[in-house]
Length: 148
Image 1 (cartoon, one colour):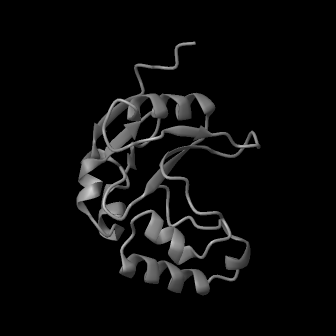
Image 2 (image 1 turned 135 degrees about the vertical axis):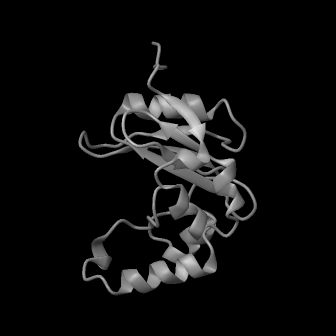
Image 3 (image 1 turned 120 degrees about the horizontal axis):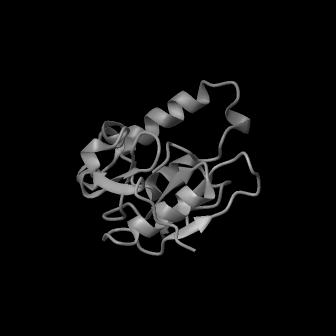
């Protein structure tokens, strides 16, 4: 099965739609520059490599073929060890491409997960402050500061 496509490509990190978002929140903002914009159909999204205190990462994709293409593309560049696709059990939910160490379990504290993904202490504190103010926090996604 050929999972590559002319539409799937890696672009420089600064071309990612969410580049500034990650650059402002990572403990080591240079990791954003070391990443790549994964361009499929929609806006290119940043894939941030492991390094420094960042031990793993992930990106979500709506279609299995997109996740497979992203995994193939990221496998050609440094900083994305142990690439794997985590299949969603549900047809209408995103599949993820993960890299680096396995992420903490969903029940871990948000701060533990934030440190694992390499966010700064200020970004983690801001996330925790915002999360504690939302009425649905008890049932929200377990540790999603954002797709990384």
